Amino acid sequence: MPELHPYRRILALVRFDARDSIVVEKALLLARLNRAQLDLLHLIEPDGALDGGYSRHSSAEAARTLEAAALRRLEFLAASLGAGEACCHTRYGPHRQGFTRHIRRLPPDLVVTGEEPAGVDGPHDVLVLSAGRRHGGRGWHTWLAGVFGLLAGRGMRVSAGRVQRCVD
Image (cartoon, rainbow, N blue to C red):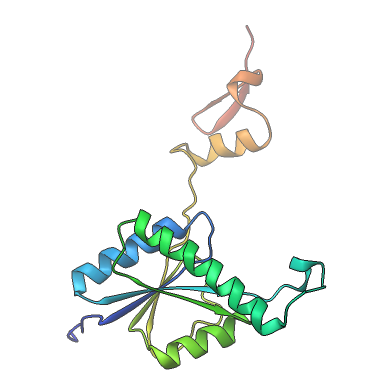
């Protein structure tokens, strides 16, 4: 069995969505277990509609302003989740280019993300934390009956894999 090498730098991709706390907490746990440096990165996709397409400032100044605002938000998120020791980074531009520029400068051993890894390829490992599907512990026949509105509260009963009409 090959020997596992410890991670020295872990990068968590933050999108400011519902999965961020899970992504940051898991990356923080792995960083502490490996005594690794934790980096948080938020990639800002350019959007001409933010200012109605009419920016009062140059595009470089607008990018710096957006990066500064996202950095404050990222630092707040890190502090609120107990990851104050993490280095926070923001990049304005197309996601693939921003990610490539960042990993060229600070190459991670592991990337933790909450979505499918489009454009996060490279010589590092990738951990995707996706939301699992839950059926509430019910069987497939109960789920199927629920899809068609055939649950017991609607005059139907599901038992032993068969749907029966309730006669009361």
